[in-house]
Image (cartoon, rainbow, N blue to C red):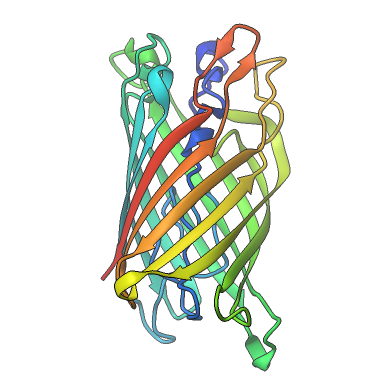
Length: 303
């Protein structure tokens, strides 16, 4: 899903804008060891853009029921809006895989928004290597590894009758996640991971010059709400490669997000997430993407 091509410098301006995509939806139901059925922006069981070590629910010897999700990001007047539709499947108690389609709503800036005219595709897979609390070790986090692959057939700036080329990038990551239930009144979720990526801002801003190692993580606090509901408050960070291919001088900051998740009733398979992302503003002198405090919404349902 490369929006920045070597032959189209305009696309490179799309940088961290998409960082606003980072509204975290922190999933794990409080005192339960089973994660809520929440998918992130790219269709993984996770926060808004970062994955957790948990996988979609499934029996040990079969395939589970699918989880579907819809996400919306208001990326502001320059870049417009982004909508995603995802479906993810769990298998054999340790594996998940899925597909996400991203649709774009034009912004007001000619020459930038049309770069997403044809949308893009995301596929992902994750395998759980170590179960949380394995061997009755209450201190042990869940540990998983996975990948995300993105592709877009681009009709550059909407000016060509046929696509010019397919753009690709990918992440390869490992992540550890622990839900601390010893704090019985307010359970705490902690997650930390490391990835090798050649994507700039999850591919929405193009490519980095080469694969870079980047860290990501999340923390959340789980509160009991009225009528057996659950409220999860948290934040996440996602480091980005500092450089952007073919855009000298651009400097992409770490993305920070702040969000709330509502689980309407106990054991619910339905989640609603709201958040605000601290994303990118001026990425170069005279270039302001205006996505410093953008709103995002997510809805997930597990069958």
